[in-house]
Image 1 (tube, rainbow, N blue to C red):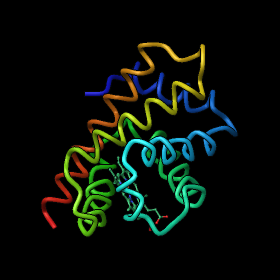
Image 2: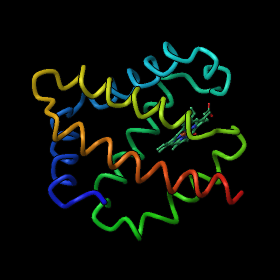
Image 3: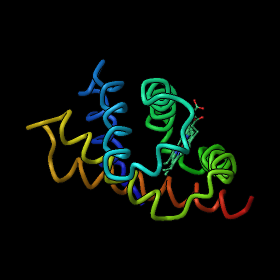
Length: 137
Ligand code: HEM
């Protein structure tokens, strides 16, 4: 379970990125495709366009994490949407690494082990609900 303190860390580190959050998200996709060139064919949208929607998604998720139960159906629904991409847990593990690496680069010296753990745990909780959604579809 993501703790209250971790939620604060997540929100604070997201705020620290400020206008760089878009750049951070683009970096996520570049990391993902550098590690897994085969994932590129899944995406029609460019990393730039994907990063715009994902910044929006993160803005919603990060302001509502305290009530994960309320978010659950939305995340589950996102999982159902992802069913068609035939994803497995390994795709999520790769994305997790791509996000944490991008965060580390963008935050630089401001990145701490606590912030890293908070992002990792929040990602794992969200990924689990998405995978439930994928499997239900
Ligand atoms: C916590 C995990 C994830 C979240 C929150 C998430 C969120 C989203 C959202 C909001 C969209 C819609 C974007 C749009 O159409 O503008 C999307 C699309 C997509 N996602 Fe994810 N996603 C996650 C994991 C993954 C993973 C692990 C993969 C595969 C490696 C993946 C592949 C895709 C693809 C292929 C699309 C469609 C892109 C396109 O239309 O070009 N997603 N995702």
